[in-house]
Length: 613
Ligand SMILES: Cc1cc2nc3c(=O)[nH]c(=O)nc-3n(C[C@H](O)[C@H](O)[C@H](O)COP(=O)(O)OP(=O)(O)OC[C@H]3O[C@@H](n4cnc5c(N)ncnc54)[C@H](O)[C@@H]3O)c2cc1C
Image 1 (tube, rainbow, N blue to C red):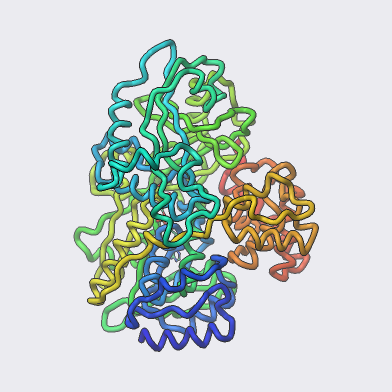
Image 2: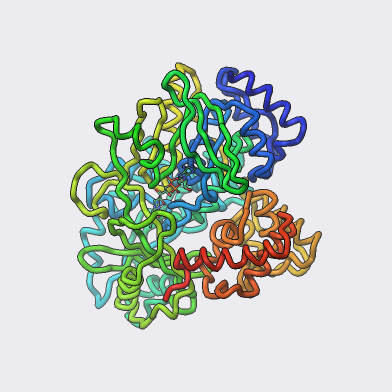
């Protein structure tokens, strides 16, 4: 089967169906030499959806991944780099589930130390380090501050936790060399040529140890605290990313190794042969057509929806863990209203804390963490959650911010694993769960954005073991998205200065493509929302190379304007029309369809509650 598939792909490649791929995938049976693909210069973006659909029905795959969040994207990358032929189906849009609604932290999770989840924290800290190395443009060190007031010593328990955090973040065998490589925010791995192959390991980022800082230093990092006149605090480091872009980048890399990915294709059942899962029945949600995608193995990476795929099968298993969704809400504010350079740990009552973080030019506040029983279709931030977060912020920063000051809000649900324990979700472990059910389908869920690579490894290790193959994991050495220095980008007339760093951070090398579009069609050099760096050229690129199919895909996930400037997108505003017009040209929409798409976005924005009331 596998070599047959290889031939199939050679045919597809030669007819240029698989555009961004540098060569056909090598099947596992052929020795798993896929990593060779990584050496060529490339633009790691997703192939055209129609081409992907054709490839899906024409081919038989080694692995079918269901779900296009970070977990599914990670499995697709891991499996394809080990030589498996891979298909990935996403029912909505890539990252439309939990993976676009996180706190955007790539972190060990200081608070999990309270639960003595030491293994989880250590694993996440090591992944944090690795991800800065593999995607230095997308995963960036962030200074975080725990301030103290009135000359008080910062909390000693916190100091002990930070000591442990420091110790656990250092790779074994590398502690001695650590001093020479340490660096604060923005240093370390952020070399001009990014995470180039082969040498990435030599430039790894290692955070400075946490330390006490003066009141002045606290204010440099948290100017918003000026009214409270902090007298000192702890400074430590974690990392931050753009979660949806991380998913798209990982998918782009998976595609370079031969994975075929399509969004808006929902899996509705499994195909079976001899009682084993041999692919899936799926619906193309754009055309309504049913497709059969054949595959030797099926991986369920549907996050909080994991129990929905073949619930009957799951019930047959005695000790299959169940998903227990927990809702988390975030708010965004303008930098002027709550100016931050680093992040702050903000007390939020009853021993809980939330983050206030600088993110993409705004301030991001979150998160809540409460059991959730509503519909999983659209997760709305509740008025109660918004009030809770604003209360914590106002009391900590001595501000009087109200919902009217918010630039956006969003909520998501964590796929926490219930063990039958009645503890509140804040106490439940963020560990990943992998289980195999009667048809051989492997489900991987739970975990964190930070630990996607480990979750993927766990899953593909299981496949490899099942197939009795020799195919070690390679994702620790595969750069993600080819980082680039801002000054390597060509200047294009009409493109605002602030767009260049934003493009380099979002796309890495592929920012060249955005700028080429802006140079070719001058009107695309303009920002989508005046004053913000995201360009109309990104809309065209999103349609051509990232399978964006709707205004919401562009505003909520390809760019993050829906989270950062929701009020500028209300009531079919000019930016929404501009996005729809660019998409119309790219996707061949009629005038009527374009109007309907503008209205559809208004409905989506309402359902998602991105404009706080
Ligand atoms: C509020 C909040 C804050 C968080 N903050 C952080 C953080 O700062 N750092 C961190 O490390 N982690 C964080 N997390 C956790 C992290 O976001 C999640 O663990 C991770 O995103 C889960 O990814 P996933 O791919 O498993 O699920 P998802 O991203 O939900 O992906 C599952 C996908 O499967 C698709 N799907 C479902 N059913 C089907 C079907 N039948 N056919 C095809 N596709 C289907 C869905 O549309 C969805 O896109 C946070 C989570 C929340 C909720």
